[in-house]
Image 1 (cartoon, rainbow, N blue to C red):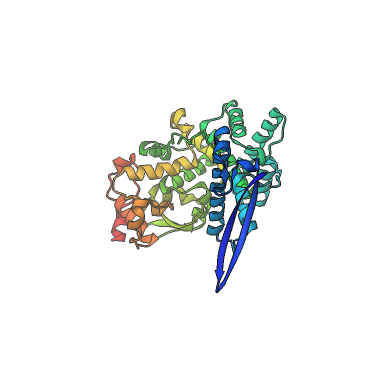
Image 2 (image 1 turned 45 degrees about the horizontal axis):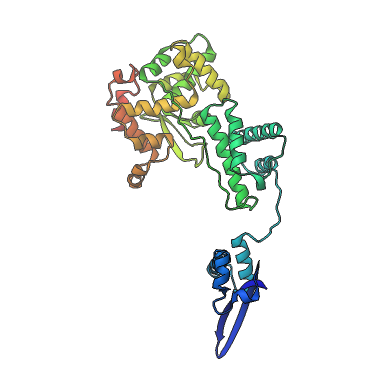
Amino acid sequence: MVVAFGFCEDTIYGTDRKHRYLRLNTGRLIKLESWNNKESRPSLEHSMKDKLKLHHFLDEQEKLMSQAIQIVVDSPYAVDITPDSVKTSFFKKSGKLRTRVVKVCVVKDIEEFIATSDLKHLTTANYNGLVLQLTDFERVKKQILYWHQFNQKVFDEFLDFLSSQKYEPTTLWGFQKRLVAAFNRAKKRELIPPSLFLEKRFKYKTPDKSYLNWDQVAEVLKHEPETKALRDIQTHFAVMALTGIRYSDLTRFYRNYEEGTAFDFSNFKVTKSPSPEILVAALLPIKKALKNGFPSVPSNGQLNLKLKVLCGQVLPYSIAKTVSCHALRRSFVTNMLSLSVIPEHVIAKLTGHAMSKELSVFHSYNKISLFENAQVFVRLLSTVDFQQTGGLRLVRFVEQELMN
């Protein structure tokens, strides 16, 4: 006989009682005389011969069936619990449900994601880099990568392939991060079994971030370049080093520049999401540099290169080569905090940075306007001895008088 097990559900509707049965064959065979109908288990003699193998197998099947029923009961999508729905749940739970394998090429899937998503230019470039690496990996392995076959072993082999190319740790981390993100998107679309997970190998390491201190900033601003082109670069240097704005907001700073009674300023929404509005004060070195008008803004790459050339004329090469637009933003925040008179929340409001968790509650009580925040900034700077800023005079005393 074929060993089977069944479940019966009793339901009562008013005075009527209904029974629904579910019977499943296990695929195991046993002689009729070796079966105990009362216990629904093999006889003791049979169990001793097969060392309780069939007995334990049936216990495990009943356990799986109970779990399958509970899954159907708990499901928010189950309108009615039927033998068929329980059977399907049981087959899924026991791994016996055969599903159609959808073959999706990893490279093609990522390329489609790039083409159909509204990604930033840099993010698109990074994903394109991942596609090139995966394509090279396929060429070396002489096989196409498909999501339904993409497991930890394949992932580790790809990471080994990347490691052999001697990339920087942050680059390796970036490739890994983007591939795991693509893997998780495929998993949500049920292209990958839900039981599969990837164990990451590369960790993000924050690189040493350079900045110019007050003395170095002052040295560059006191320098007198011989050409107009470098004088224009020096103007950009002054604006970014003394306002902390990003390269993407440099044109906006010039377009919205205004001459105020107490101090000049620029008020605009920053480019980077979530695009907060900021109002930055133009300190004395900026006002001096802008007397001859606003210089044209070169591309980010060109400006970074020319900033290095400018700084290389007065600073050691080891320092000049690290100067960039973002290094000047970092320099502004670091130098202002080093004065110990400018609160962090004032600087954050000037630069458009998000508040830390510790400051966010306090900042919710801070209702001063952007212009008032800039006033506080200038007023606090007026209390600083100019020797602390590398000999640079950042504000005039008359400005303090006007604000009072």
